[in-house]
Image 1: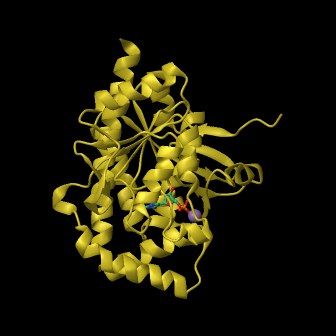
Image 2: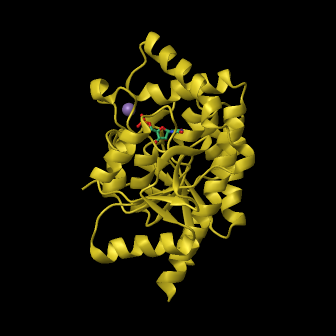
Length: 307
Ligand code: PSU
Ligand code: MN
């Protein structure tokens, strides 16, 4: 048998020994979601937001064939500066590790890494979902199926309106994934607090979210939970404003013949340019907000385990 080269960062190792609260963080947002050098700055700020909220951050990535859970400062910087890091999901993560490759982890791959390291909570920006036109392209992110399978609570700001949000919610329901809006009834749409759609579930405290996760595992119901945490009001770009930019980005992707893994990064970059960076500022604000809530949920889970 080949042993899994799982490397815990020093801070994460200590947190495991202390049974402290840990929050996993993804790395595709660093390599494919934000431009240099804001990606590095943001990655550091997000880690600090987790610490300030009383938990330990564990940024996950594959580096030279090792699955790192918690990156030291040098590794984080090197990854952020990389121009050609792979974007890893469930399908290609093992192959990358086995062949000594380097790549950033998407939501799906980060969930797998977190679970292997015994981490129950993961904070990010937004999840992948059902793309518009999926009835023809069949482009549905592996993130959705991962949520159905792997017992990690993922905190995101909903899903971007570059996706087909009603279909994304339908698929999550079919897969048996709890979708919990935090503190409101509506399902948030990443840059916008409201998508116009109702969220299937609403919770108002980290304790309730932690209790629901525990109950699922108690019952032997597999899979995780999606917590949809609305962007802070002061940072939001309402749907009416961002919609036309999204339409332009989608038609640009179509004319350029973009497909597969390249779709999401292409759309994000286009929207960043078209909003003169405002989309990036909003993105950073919501990730920090999710990091804080992730830390609260991780602490609430620790509290339940101790009681
Ligand atoms: N959505 C965002 N920002 C991102 C991503 C999604 O708003 O950076 C990234 C995440 O890593 C997510 C991945 O898991 O894109 C989904 O890609 P795909 O649609 O190719 O599965
Ligand atoms: Mn896809």
